[in-house]
Length: 351
Ligand code: NDP
Ligand code: GDR
Image (cartoon, rainbow, N blue to C red; front, side, top):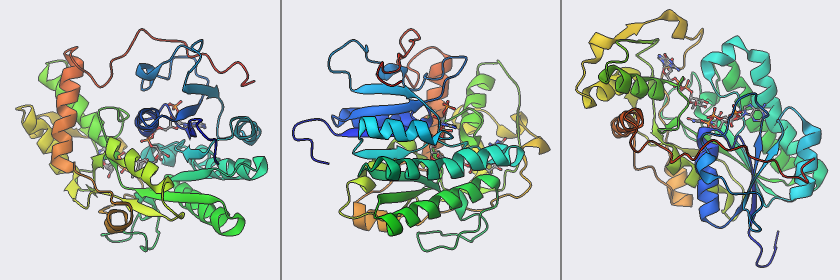
């Protein structure tokens, strides 16, 4: 859509999550007007974006939040008609694989059907936006590495199955309705803003607390799984690049570097001068009914066609995250320069 000198408009579902917060930063830095969908919660849920807060009374506010939910297609349709975004990033999901076994229906509704609602709302609103769908390496599941865009999908969790549904819906809306839609098949990506119950952050946060004498042990499940861990800010850059391409296509974003859970754990503890075997205990509650043994991506297509590549992987990432958790615990420079908690006003016209 050509708006002359007006800023480009992006709409992000999942803006309060790890990726949403980095993406909002990136797009604001590029001059975009950014609209984010947030869920009403009984406690503040905007801690990852509070440092981006702008006073809603300023005339040139470029970050606007809207209450809503990807389970509510009417709300999404209304917002798309009213905002007329140029780019839509669908990052909202129940994104925890272990939790998806406990809540398969909820996960399917949000992670799978939620993506369909975003696509359908855009179709109904007749807004010619470019759409990014957050697909996942979990879709490959049991298929042997290395995995790329041609690799067969074999999901091993309700989360993985939901992402496959969303992935194929996105392709079908592209093929059937001409929607400018892409799926980014992203391998694990982490950061100091990673949710505290995912493996990397659980470990680096525990390392900082054990080092400070606040805790003695951390309980983990399967240490044998192999993942391809990259750094989240680099991955949101890749998302944006996918939407700037000449034509819509799907891309794998990965480092190509294999790292086992055990190696990540030992690197993180080593970095803080601790012996991991003294502090890590096993708890079978963190096992999954079906595990994904090895995910190692081949990001060759993204390198060739988007000039995208990851620079931080596995062990470097573990050290970076340990440093950030130690700094945060010591009250120094944490991951965010957070102002006093703010009550984000939802837009007055966003009724
Ligand atoms: P997070 O779990 O950190 O963030 C998920 C976001 O979705 C949060 O903002 C959450 O809101 C929001 N959300 C959850 N349910 C709903 C709902 N019903 N309606 C609206 N919003 C909702 O995930 P990440 O940032 O790590 O990941 C972003 C996306 O990328 C997800 O779709 C994830 O599945 C996918 N992905 C992630 C990878 C990774 O390694 N990080 C790899 C591949 C794919 P709230 O804050 O209120 O909970
Ligand atoms: P994953 O990430 O399932 O790959 O999904 P997670 O960090 O949860 O698990 C990674 C591996 O570590 C093993 N593991 C543990 N995991 C957790 N969470 N807690 C533990 O105590 C623990 N002990 C061992 C797991 O079994 C697994 O093998 C992430 C999510 O961000 C998805 O949304 C995303 O799509 C995929 O990455 C790519």
